[in-house]
Length: 120
Image 1: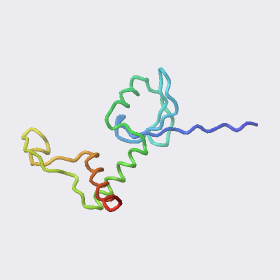
Image 2: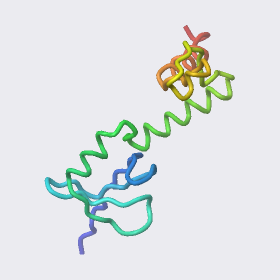
Image 3: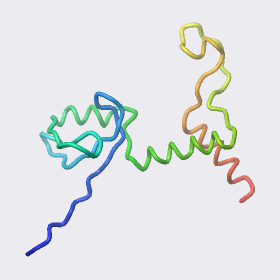
Image 4: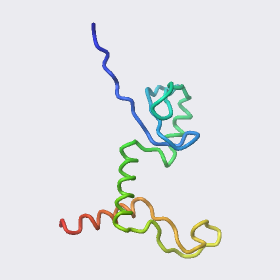
């Protein structure tokens, strides 16, 4: 009797009705089989819907999301602020108070600068 080779199910972090993990069993030219989280049945969605999900800015693999979480935790542990001062703009939700959130790249570069300053 031949053993079936288990195929690794790819897991992504994305927005599909809500933020969360999505496991993808297969991607075809017409349909994509996926499920929320790791429980429940796989459901079939149209490929066009999947393309919209993947084009969203929050779409990333689970490893990339974990890397972001780790860097943000290190920034908090190192006392790096998540915000920066900015010019006041009355129509913006946070800039009207004179601050805005830093991008992930800015936070990551600050964390790396502190962690690796003694290595060079």
